[in-house]
Image (cartoon, rainbow, N blue to C red; front, side, top):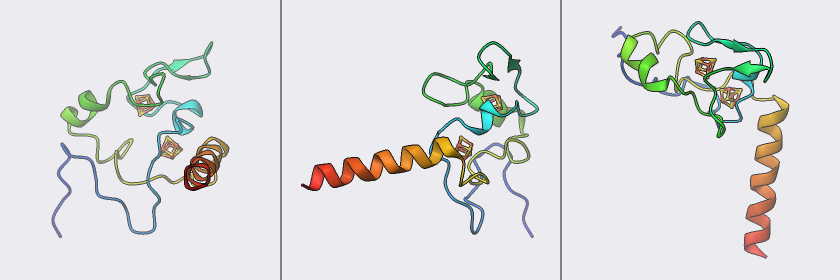
Length: 98
Ligand code: SF4
Ligand code: SF4
């Protein structure tokens, strides 16, 4: 079996759901590349639009396939921030159609 290219985001794991940048996981605790910002209660590298500020650096390190496994999919599909974003997007879709 071929090994994943550690410099590229991983394909979605079978059965996983896509990350929608709710930022929830990086507000629960830092991955091994992160640093906890206690005042903001999130990783110091999480950007205002819920992206990883070290994304390119992590991929370039060759460790992106292991942790935080960029692109492999979200394992927190029931997290409340994600659920709120999905509801908001669906309501917007309905509004746009009406
Ligand atoms: S909890 Fe899931 S959807 Fe939210 S940022 Fe993490 S991987 Fe993405
Ligand atoms: S380094 Fe990036 S992926 Fe890791 S916890 Fe911080 S923002 Fe999230």
